[in-house]
Length: 131
Image (cartoon, rainbow, N blue to C red):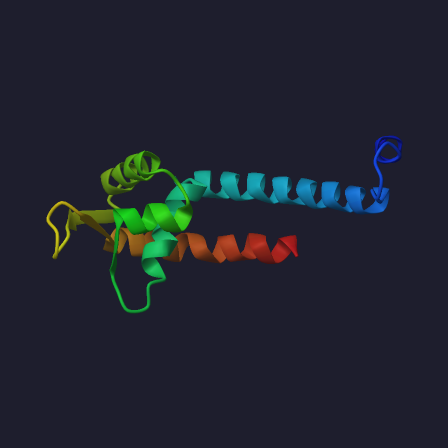
């Protein structure tokens, strides 16, 4: 099938196209495996990524909501809803910014730190197994 389509276009190597399709399939399977893993820990990929973003800051314990949205390239409304879910679960705290009371600073709670400690070994195991 790929060769039939590739014949229609100049400079298309069917082997490269098949390689890309294989890579896409592998990525899709990995994402599904990770999504199932996160769901078994009452998380989503986005919730997990937010926890990681806050945790990995070497010199800070908080991130502004705008920083989280920008680093994840996710719309602010989606980030706001996801942060609300994390706060309701007790995994993060949200407070007014020190310099600007209108801004919001997000930090991990002890429960959030514990959740990461619980989830990270399996997460890295899945990534390691994929390679």
